[in-house]
Image (cartoon, rainbow, N blue to C red; front, side, top):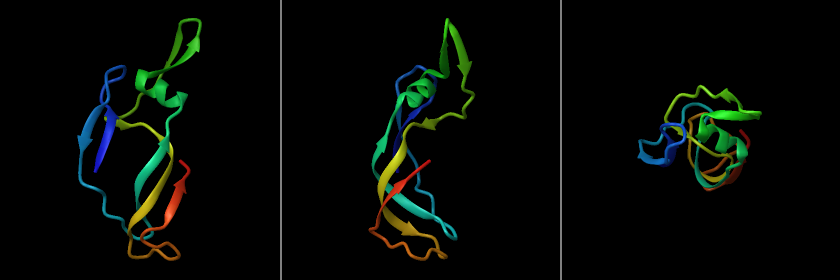
Length: 95
């Protein structure tokens, strides 16, 4: 699995590769086809929300951090207790 991630606020994203998680129980694994990136992701990349007037609200997040949300993808693996979802189904995932 590959992801471009924030490894340090304000620095270029880095491509990282790691093993895909194995779905357990009622979990499903979805291969991302597209996802939204909005202004909140820009703040996360910068490491703080800009409150205006030179004030910033720090965002203490564990790094590396993968940006993006509101994901659209295809189900590629199912946990053993999953019902009513099939491999190949397309899904929108709300954060």
